[in-house]
Length: 415
Image (cartoon, rainbow, N blue to C red):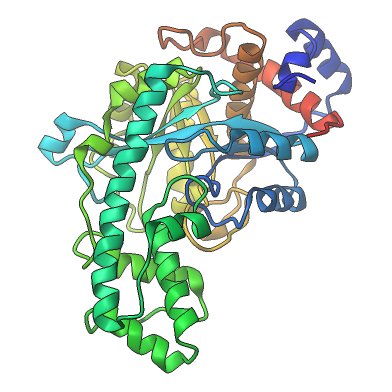
């Protein structure tokens, strides 16, 4: 077997004929955006993702870690064993300097100019490119400098409360992280350290109150996810006692991020934040026509959403507009916070997606699957080398992607 089983699939004409004979026309459940333990995630390990996917009958999963492709091989091996098609994605945090200067929020509700940005359907195995590797290594390095400074500040706070308590970066990484240590790993390490040293609830609450600088603990001690979020909010976020602002060197300009994604074989994709619980969008996303114009001006023809944070009516109106305008659209759940929720994509308050939204999500996954299949076979994908999207061929990519997904999930693989 080759290093990517898509290389061993029939050519596209034969694959489409096979699909015509064997298709049930099923619109499969997809989750196109999942963080794994290689960045930070709710999952204890990679196997748990696929165990949950089997129970929930998902057939397409997208790995979407920050800055790293280190988890691709393990993700791929599990996808083979479970006959679930993998999408190979990545996420960055970038900067739009002009918008930052104007105080315009993009898709980070707290930081003007700061933007999350994804690449979809990268090469697998990842393509070796020294210049891209160097940039990614530098991003990882800068992010870990900030994390180490946070741990130093946390230790000042812990030692003042109890001289026997402290954290080490190397231990936090070994115990809780696969590749990058992030704020959420530190919060988990603090919770577990306090719980291991203080068996009684009263002592745990007293210690938390001390490190919160006198504020009472409001999270239930029996709810690890809520408690870790509270620790993170009180200590590590802006205005927290252990907060360390990120160096701008840790953020690339968006055009540079797009170039890295294209060089790595991917489809540049803008992650949409959309409405909050008050029905308010950021300045950048408030007008969907203007947002679309901005994205097209950057040669971005793909968007993704995390519907669990959106009102379904608001989401549907937005998604239908971008679908009508030929964008590739994909949905996910992230799972990059403590607390294990289902993998099945739903709207806010677990409202199920309607059939139209499920269909659009599946069609987006099909385009990415076809893109990966063609690249695996040394052919041009949905996005050309210059960043132009083959929008006029989108329906052909959807049809080919359906065949790729169906072939993958019906084949007995051995990973």
